[in-house]
Length: 407
Image (cartoon, rainbow, N blue to C red):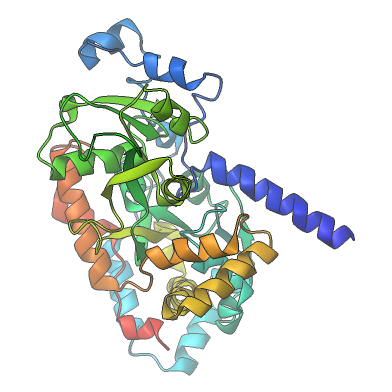
């Protein structure tokens, strides 16, 4: 009885977490708008005014708010990229016995590793790796944990790895958070939608666009990529920051014309006959093959624990391949996640969400996707205009022989 009660309480907690994390691949959803209703939030945008003029008058306007969370993180320096990739290249030449001996000497092999999971479906391979024994098979002692802010927790050493959206983490890295990506986990994740009976079929100049989370946050950044691909500029639209719990209401009340939110939310509202998609990272030709999310490790941890990082990455990668393998596996994954209290909701719906994503991406997918996003972010001034693009990309990537992951 106590076990069943605990499971129900945990499931309830994950439901709350899902809303707070916008049901997406990130836990960086703003809480600034919780105290306002949708009408107040949308009207707080400085309609008819230039953003600079508006923000000079009212720095608290939702149009002016930016994601400043990484500004408080202490910059501990950047691990040596050349050393990291040289070390990883050398791992391919080691025998299994030599690899295990090297692993035993690492700090990461001597303690419990804390791996973050935010309660959404996109990073499902992380809890699946725990539940199906992929971590255990690598000789790892792991614990799945929930943290409020994954980037801060990684930077401070509270967790050892997490899944994050590239469009969320790249600005943080430029601001001093030393994160490294050894693996892209999947494609897809985010869509733009309008009301089901709306005449709108695409982005058009002058629209009010509501995004989950802060201006300057992950879903705003993805929206900027949508409109840039369609030939528009940032100033062609009015941007409204909304939270996950009120963004649909804002759309229904006409406070915004278009919303940009996680697929898991949009798909549910489509099933309910409330919205229709006009843009998709998951299905549109210009985004569908691009990596959305990646496994991130602190640079210092990677430098000191190359075999541990390889083993964690390999466990998650093989869990991802298992999910991708068949519809039956996705249904089993959805049921396992529900039974363990990691997610809530209908397992059949959750299995369908997993099926819309493509798991099991390789090093080339990550490198190509990262290159595209960095280039566009510099053009959009999400990253500094004077960014050395090639040096920035090189700093982030961990390169190794993909065959090391398939053992």
